Every structure is written in structure tokens, then in C-alpha cells.
Image 1 (cartoon, rainbow, N blue to C red):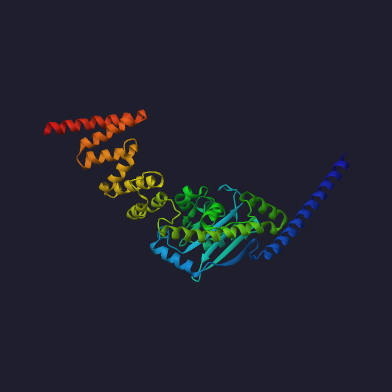
Image 2: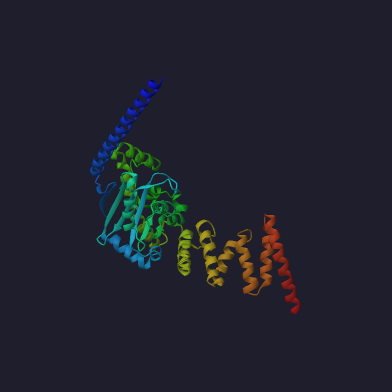
Length: 392
């Protein structure tokens, strides 16, 4: 019995050594294959497990000039002075927790001659993450402005976690995330605001045989297991196109906001809301071409509601009155009717006019809560009218 047990232990020990040796050989073979294939894909080794691929794209000197112009007079860029780094990352998952790693990151720079230079950093194995992050930190310094698409809530959040976990200090730079801009300006026009649909609808870019985003992590895991970097070829191409599209999208949005209103693709209300935090008066001017007091419907209605509110905010309430009148019309907007009543009661000193409007609204109101709110206002206005009549 002892001999049998001893033999079994020896056999397990021998088998274990064989398995370990085999795994080491497979790992070395996979790493060797991976190194060769990454080099074939245009990557240069910077560290044991960090590689970089540099590509250039001729986007034209006029594009550089337009960005410089928009930094001074645009509607988006003056809030985000450069220099700009156009950034995107591919990750091992969709969460921003500790288990998600950014294995492929790109930093792009537009040069004065219109050449866009893109650096794509890839981590060929997890031990290379500290060196990989140090290289990214060199591009993403506190003085730059990151331009991304859904990077503010995801990509740079993943990076922040990875820097913390590796004990590497990193001050997250200011960030212009074009996803929020596009949603505000174009969602009512194009529907879905994922980058692929935005490219098709706004930039006229149609990707063919593009890799689904859900497939990206699995390809990276297979690369780690087999060293077959060819698996990553469509991921790298997808990533490159994402970043180049960021430059084109940024300029497209600024160009669009400078066009005549009849040619703009941006939603007027969304456009004004985007500008309001920076310049309320400019937002009012942007809305003016869309305001049609004889047609308070659809796009015109949204523009009128927003413009009236902005006029009131800057103390030009008398200019908002025609808009509220058009929106109100008996049976129309209760909000506009209330604003009219407030104006006549508190600014014009005409409680009788305010009372007439409130009574009209009460007659046409369909909801009991609206009538209840109007009851209180009507009671107060009746008292004011009686007091005024007795004083006379």
C-alpha cells in the first residue's frame, strides 16, 4: 500500500513537472508568435509587453485652420482651449470596475500642416500595464484637453481606476466628450447616437465589415492565449477609424453651427441649450430664425418656448409677450398662459387682463390639478381687481 502510494506521488510529481514545462514552452511559443505578428501589423516594441503603432492621415491644412478659428469664435471649442489629444480606448469589458483593463489606447494629434498623427499603444500581456500607463500619462498630461466619444464616463474612468491600482499618479485632464454634444444637437434628427450611426448620418462615412464592439474583448483574450495578433487586426482598424472620426466630427459640428439656419442639421432648441451656459444672448439670436409666431407648432414651438424663457431670464420680458400670446391662444399652452398672466399682473399692472386669461384657461383645462392651481390664482386676481375698483 505504501509502495503504491509512493509511486503514485512520484507519478503526480513527474506529470506536474511535465505540465508546467509544457505550459512554459507554450507561453514562450505564444509570446514569440505574438511578437512577430504585432511587428507585422506595424507595431514597434517599446517595453517587454508594450508596443506602439504610429500612423498618419492627411486631413488638410484647412481643417487645422478652421479649428484655430473656432477656438476663437466657435460655439464648442472656446470652452475647451487646446492643445487637443483625440483619445479612445478598447477595453476587456463594459464596466469601469477593477476588473476592466484598457489594453489598446490611441492618442491622436492634429499638426499645423493638416497631418493627423496617431499613436496606438497595445499591451501584449498584463505585466506590461505599469509601463503602458506611464507612456499614456506622457500624452495625457494635465495641460491638454482630451477629445473623446463616450470617453468621459467610460474610457478615462477605466484609466483612472488602472492608474490608482498600479499606484501611478495621474491628474485627469479636462475633457470634451462629443457624445453629449451630439445627443443635444442631433438626436432629434438622427435617432441613435452611437458613433457608427453618427458617422453615417453626419459625416457620410460607411464602414464595411466593421467588428462588433461585443467581440473585441474576446479577441484580446484569444490573443493572450495563442499569441495570434492577427485576431486583433480588425480591432486595431476599428480603433483607428474611431479616433480619426473624432477630428472630423468636431469640425463638422462647429461648421454646422456656423451655417445658415436653413442648411443646419442641428436641432435649434438643442443648439441654444448648448450655447446658453456660455452666452445667453447668442442663444437667443440662434433661435430667432426658427421662431414663427403664426405657426406655434413643431420646431417653431420648441424654439419659441425656449426663446421666451431666455428673454425673460435676461430681463427682456416684453419681447417674450408675443411668443407667449402665440403659444397660449385659448386651448394652447397653459405654461405660456400663466406667464402671460404673470406679466399682466406684475409688470403691466393689468390684473383684469390676467384674470381674463386665467378664466379662459380654467374653462379649457382638462386636468383637475390645473383647475385647482388656477382657482388660487383667480381668487387672488379677483381680490386685486376688487381692491383696485374700490380705490378708484
